[in-house]
Length: 442
Image (cartoon, rainbow, N blue to C red; front, side, top):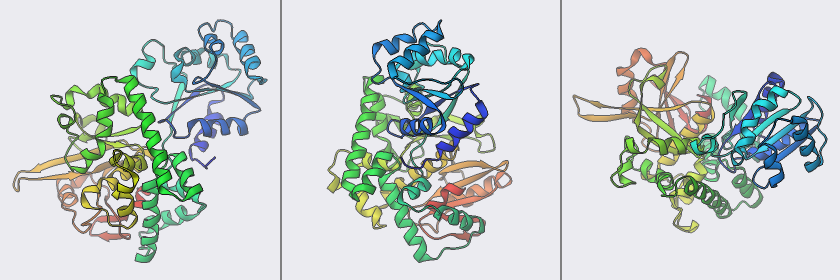
């Protein structure tokens, strides 16, 4: 198993909760939820039972239809799985719990009983159809699991200390030198291509073959597509999802629903966008009409952008209908010759990094009345009771008109301004210019 940061979050939950809450680990399919939870169960508990509702026999599913006698439930679980449970020393895992809603509803009584700890894992778990007929337990704490971030990718490669050094560089804002930056950017571009899905990372490390990696990612996208059709047989979710790369490549100020779904507007698909976000396969950035601390109060739900939760999957989705040999992103990105119209790859990786840090995604556009020119800030995050505008550049990194105008328009609200680009650390006036791999430290 790859070293994952979420393991520390699981430890914190166990120490703090002491059986008072269950933990629901959410995340897209194939992100590694089951693997890390089972490794945690094996190492941190005297014994554990993992109930996988993908293939659990009917006798196990039926246990949760009537939980009036918990002694009977626990006896059956121990007999069926051949595992002895120890009071306050054992963990019961409900894997893919969305496939058995009564089990999730049972969490309330199981937690109140207090004999064992409980972790649930699931994909597409928050979608309305999976919780419509049950009482969602208040004793359930949620924990989001994201694809492997760049630091975890470096750990998988065997470089344990590089990120600590980079953080020191970020804090001191000392240039690394062009040669070192090129080397670091080369590795980061490799991360962008492979992505953070554990299967894809394992395929790369074991084969060093990007074509095999691409096939793994195509298989994952196929799974997602199958899930979307189960939820939305009309194909609406699938079409909205598959159009994300093309929409970002247009550099438009929003996702244009009408160009994907005929005779539909953003107001018509608010529920579908919510379902995509709930699937954890997609990240939604909403327009902040009045960018300030507490941007959720000024979001425009009908003006949004969509990103993939994993940039490696984004790269494959861009050319899903073409053979690997025709996917110019792999060749161009590795050679640092990515065309301007494919610069959305960089924007997606910044979105992924910010989301994994716990930031909600917001952006801002406005029209300058005097020049009649439109300006856009790609991302805005809250820091130290102020806001930090972020502009992402894959080329023309010396131009940052939107940041300049934004700084004038909202001067009193701004903490720091960031320009994310492919070059070395530098300062351009009041703007902190950072190579893409340092986004994680903002």
